[in-house]
Amino acid sequence: MSHYIRSSDEERRELMNRRRSGDLTVSNQQIADAFEIDIDRDPYDLPLERLEPSHPTLFQYGKHWRYFERLRAEAPVHYHKHAMAGPYWSVTRFDDIRYVDSNHEIFSSDQSRGGISLNGRKPQELTADSFVNFIATDPPKHDEQRQVVTPMFTPKNLAEIEPLIRERAGRILDNLPINEEFNWVEKVSIELTGQMLATLFDVPQEDRLKLIDWSDTISALGDPEQFDNPEQGWAKLQHCVGYFREFFDERRKQPPKFDLLSMMAHDPATNNQTPGEFFGNIMLLIVGGNDTTRNSISGGVLALNQNPDEYAKLRANHDLIPSMVPEIIRWQSPVLHMARTATRDTELGGQQIREGDRVCMWYVSGNRDDDKLERPNDFIIDRARPREHMSFGFGIHRCVGNRLAEMQLRTIWQEILKRFDTIEVTGEPKRIRSNFIHGIRELPVTIRA
Image (cartoon, rainbow, N blue to C red):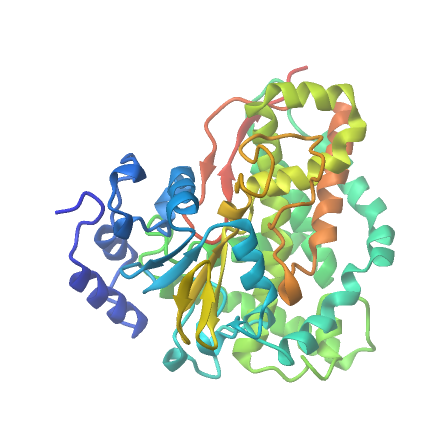
């Protein structure tokens, strides 16, 4: 019996098939037990055919790095026959990932083919009420729906909202406790991103934590510590659907305004969506507006504490913030992977990919590719080419809010350095259990007087 799994491949397949068919008796704990992994076992001791990096517990405990190191070196395009989400190809090198991401005609994002995550639904499981968003579609539908929200993230509009972000960042920081340990994620990262989300949707600020909670629920659907089964999480998210549907219906009756809901309500590409499309696009905007910025704000504090020489360099020269921001985003890699489905037979990295094969781009691995990046395992805040990373993706699906994320991160660090010499990490971080979002749930810190 391998140390890598508890159940046989056949038992695991049966469990996953029952789960996908909607069997509520299959719990998240059963799935976790069936795919149990020895996180302390060196991946170099495993047979290559058993080297499967998608187990969420690896990311929860930061044990994934050597898996990707070995895959990049020995099998950069590697087929995993037995995996939690079914068979797929891992793509782990920078240039191969960029090739897949930039060729949407060959590698489809469409939900009807499997979608953008390893946990995407199979085509036969889709209905009119299925969760579908515009990044899980192909042109022309993708382009039409993406264009609806793009005006929110133009340089002109970002320049107009920057003073508001700066004011909020200052207020959040001025209210932090001194000489007392607190959770940086809760007090700072969540607060700044939650307030921004409420502004983008033009919903009451007092509801901002609801938006964050719904975003967290999406990431935790398969986590046995959060839900017995995914259906419990989906039931919770029905409150999200009702909440935004009420505002959306109001905006349709009002003259157009400059917020995401009004943009969607008044554009032909999005004003008559199926229930699943409406829900999917709302959740896409919430998760996209929350996770990259929030986890990079937290990840930056952690990275500077883990690299005190870089923190000293930053304190000595605040002008390094603009180059530090993309380095934080590379280092954190807030989105761990994106998946695609091959639309035709093709070759990638010397491997034959067949039509219908699932392909996973491990952004977190590409961001540590030493064949492409200089000293990728080092955190360097004055890196020569700091934007040479893949955390925002490439091609038509490149993150629409990437500049907003960078601006929020730049602004919060400018305001931090005006006030505090050091944000000291004084406890172990707790990460979320996910193979999609590289998230930090708790980061204990102390600010000294």
